Every structure is written in C-alpha cells, then in structure tokens.
Length: 511
Image (cartoon, rainbow, N blue to C red; front, side, top):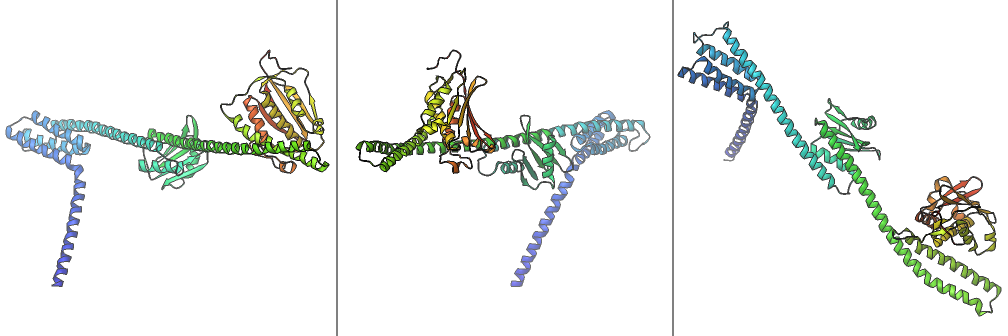
C-alpha cells in the first residue's frame, strides 16, 4: 500500500512538471508568434476578399482596392517586410483569379509588375509613417515618464531631512527613481565623491575630469551621462548617471536638482549652526548676566567696608596697605562684572549709541587720566594734531574702548617703556594709533585677538586677563561704523589702530 502511494505521488509530481514545461513552451511560442500576427491576419483578409469577390464576380479594380487595404494594415501593424509578403500574395491572387486567362500565372505581364510596385510603394510609405508615429508616441511616453520621475525626485529632495549626508541621499534617490545601475556625485566645494549602486569602473575619475572640463558628455559605449552641477552659471560639481540612455534635457535637469539639493543642505546646515550659536549666545548672556549681578552686590559691600576701615583709625601701615589692596582688587572685579553685563547690550540689535561730536584726542587723555598710578600715566605720550576734526560718537562707549586699549598697552608692554599715541586724519576718518614696546602679536592672531575670550599665545605669561577687552573695543567700533585692527613691528612691539568716522560738517564739539 505504501509503495502504491509513493508511485502515485511520484507520478503526480512528474505530471505537474510536464504540465509546467508545456505551459512554458506555449507561452514562449506565443511570444515568438505574436509579432507575425498582423501578417497572418492580413493574409487571411486577402484570402477572404479573394473568395468573396470571386464568388460575387467582382472586377479587377474593386478587388485591387480591397487588397490594398490589407497591405496598408500589414504595413501599419507589422512593418514593411510583412507588408511586402502580403503585396506579393495579393498580386498573385489578382493574376490567378481575376486576370484573363484566369487560373494561370503570367510573370511577364506588365500589369502585374505595376500592381506589385503600387503595393510596395504604399507599404513603404505607410510603414515609414507608422514607424515615425510609433517613435513619437514612445518618445512622448518616455518624456511623460521622465517628467513624472523628475517631479517625484524634486518632491523627495524637498522632503529630505538632515539625517545622513545629503550627497549619499541624493545619489541613492537618483538611482532608485530612474532605475539606474549606478550614480556618482562629485561635490567640488567639499571635494567629496558620493556613490550609489554599481557604477561603471573608472567613472569616478572621469566625473572629476568632467567637472574640470566644464562640459556635459554622453558615453554611448557605456550608456553613461557625465553632467555638470551648476548654480546659475557657476559649476559646483559633477554627476555621473550609469546605465541609461535618457535625453540630454532630463540628464541636465537631474544635474540641476543635484546642485540645488547640495546647496539646500548647506543652507540648512548654516541655519542650524546659526540657530545653535544664537541659543548658546542667549544662554551665555543669561548666565553671565546673572553671575555679574550676583557679583556686584557682595563687591559693593566689600568696597564699602574696605573704604570705611581707614576711617575707623588705629590701622598699622601693613593693614592700611592690605585694605588698599582689597579695595583695588574689588574695583577690578567690579569693572569685570560691568563688562560682562555691558557686552550683550552692545551686541543687541536694539542698542543705539548716543552720538555727539567729540575730539578723540581729548577722550584719549581722559582715559589716560583714569589710571591709578602716576607712573603709568607718565608712560603715555599723546601727539595731538594741529587740526583735528571731531568724530560723531557716544562719549561713554568710546571712553570705555580707549580705556581698554590703554589697559591692554600697559599689560603687554615692557615695564617703564614709553607708549605713543598718535592721530591721523584719513579718508573722512580719524585714526588713533597706540604703539607700545613689548609683545609682538603674530600675523595669524591679529584678527583672532578681537574674538571673545581669545588670548594670543604668549599673552598668558605677560599678564592675567579674560580676553574680553579687545572684543568690547571691536563691538564699540562696529556700533560707530568704525574699525579696529592690530599690526606688529618685528623686534619692537604691537600697534593698535582705532578708526572712527568724522562728524558732519559744521559739528560743534564740547570744549
């Protein structure tokens, strides 16, 4: 019984395999015979027209027009070769059934050749027109398909999030949407190559070369496009599309989308960084403001107490010196707290300086006179110009900036060395130059020293500091549409320059 079941099962499986094989054979046969169907139907039409016309006794002219219809149908749906076969059969039927004597063939009859020539000419013209119409129809379908794909690509580019690198995402998107074998994207601004799929060997180097050649190229042997990524007229990269014969218009449109996608990603990244910096600045301002205000209250108490101790009397010389030191350092801490509170206000968009005509040389002398030690004041030599135009500025802010420059010159110059302050009128601006002997700021650091909290190498050994002073000077100068910069004199020291625009003509400054 078991053997019988095994035999039946094997027979069933064998029958199923035979059935599947027969089905595949039938499908293959149908696929091969499908292109011949127009010819077969046209020949059937010729046979049907021949039988009906012969039974009805139609003449040669009427039957010839019927045969011509069959030739036209064969040319439209089957092409010139199938129409030629139908033409030969039609002429043979005309000669055999409708030309006298009937039921006989005559090869040398001129009318037969004329009929065959007319049929062949008709088949040739109709087949060419049909091919053109089919080609245009297929091109229209391809254009609609490419347009739809371009729309989908543009839409997905707009929806790309920030996760992952944009170059890899764009390359994968192009390959998936247009069913390409491989995509290579070259971002010239970063010098990075991005790949997706299985690109043609060596296409990476040719993509770079295409960018430097600044020309779109189609490699027919490899079915690959090399296109330039452009923003306006400026090339920003190159794109390689492998395994496609798309039109030039579609390829260049894809390249434009690639350039837009990379630029959009860079813009979004800048916005993210700017927003992060803005939030960090807000947090920093809030923290520093809170700390500064918390410092100011105990500092005020300390200064009040230290000022009252000498009045109490009975202090030794050492105690008096210590009280003076406490008061001096408390004042420095108070100035630092004021800087921390004032800097965010200077950088605020709502801040507006109170402008008035002022002489920069007088403000410079006032800043020097605020120094505690007479020995420090004596180190400064101010060269006042004979004719100095007034600047239009905020008195307190400019005095603060000059005090920072004076303090900076004292800290980083050789003790006891002279510090020279000069004034130059240049291009509707008054330029203050402060020249000190000592630390020489390297050329690479002459812009960075005006950044907040940055201190040049070597400055830490000269004097303690926070890195806030010069950044405050830069902010104040910018608020007055001025400029501050540093220059170095080898084997001598550093020169700081502050340029402020002169006031309107006829400005009267306070004497």
